[in-house]
Image (cartoon, rainbow, N blue to C red; front, side, top):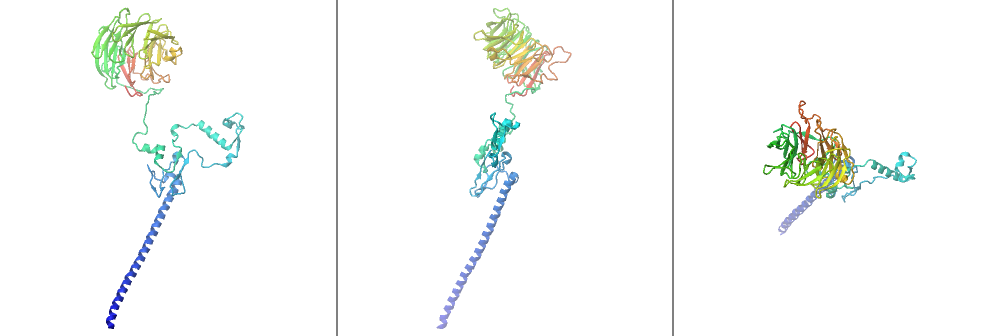
Length: 543
């Protein structure tokens, strides 16, 4: 019985011992895991400490060296733990460093307002300076009897005086007044500069010619002669561009009316028309481009219909005995043609009916005409040395005044907008007037051009009245281009290596006529050699 009782006891003891060993093993294993966990935690803490030291070192480098070691980033900067790791140093542009708050938990930067001093000397307020006793400081006085001022006031006046003597340019002044250390979308909008420029591939500098023509030298280039496809055998008396700027007519003493398609390279001839009984002295398109008026030293004139390609012979005019209708002008509204008549008469003819609709009478002989204000007014001059301004609606003279220095007017022209007009004389003098001032009684011209010494035969404003061309047929190369805004003559015109005249053994060397294309991109000039010289004016983009 005792053996049987001891056996189960020994088995039970073994189970308890095994259970105890198992439990003890678990306890031993759990202690090892705890030790390893503590070791990993310590290593992580060391790594974080090293990373924070690196971050602090880079921040210190940024504060000391600026953008020399800090990478430049675009857009919003990455942040970690609520503080910016990097920032773009703008001290080179704004000359004010960015300072960060010591409180890294908030991650906010302290903004420095532009213009505030980083440090102030308290002694400046205690010092008094006598600005009246020193000669070079007297300019700082605000009142004549002012003497002593404080040091701070002295510095402020010196800065104001410096700013007055050295005003900065507007483009150099930044728009934003506050410089923030922390980059944000609002800052990008206020700064408005670098990011917006770098986000586009457009040209940073765009060459803009604008509308203002520079004085001094005229930029131009010589092109193929406009009538190179069919030169004239006689003098070119008229050149005129069509309103579409591509069609140019030429006419002269060879009795041919020619049309050319102008492109500056080939200048193809479109058509040539021969007039048997009329050497052409003048030909011009109507401003609406529907007809061409052709005249010579005859009692009649021709009208050429461009659409129908037909010629109509008009004249003599009923009730008139003029032997020549060679000189005329067409109104800007294409309704009226004004012919120079005999004994001071101006003949007005309708472009629709080709009939005489009225006459105007000057005191002296008529030599030149010019329409103004879209055909409402007509200017005339002649042998009495006066300029007449006519109102065609009432058929009365609005005003007449003496052209300064003129004994006989030979040429007139008006700007397209009617604000200016020029009067040429038989002595080579050209007076430029403002029409409103002249009609108001001020007879003094705004400019007198006396570069030519022979009779002025032809003048022409370009479309925006920035160039005035003056032509005299009496001398070689007697052509001047005036820069109207500055009232000066272009120094490089005519070209020094003049191509306006033919070989020296030729007697036909005089420039005769000139015209600008509607956009002033081309300038055509006819001479006595039968050539029409073509130039490209670089300032104007459109022909």
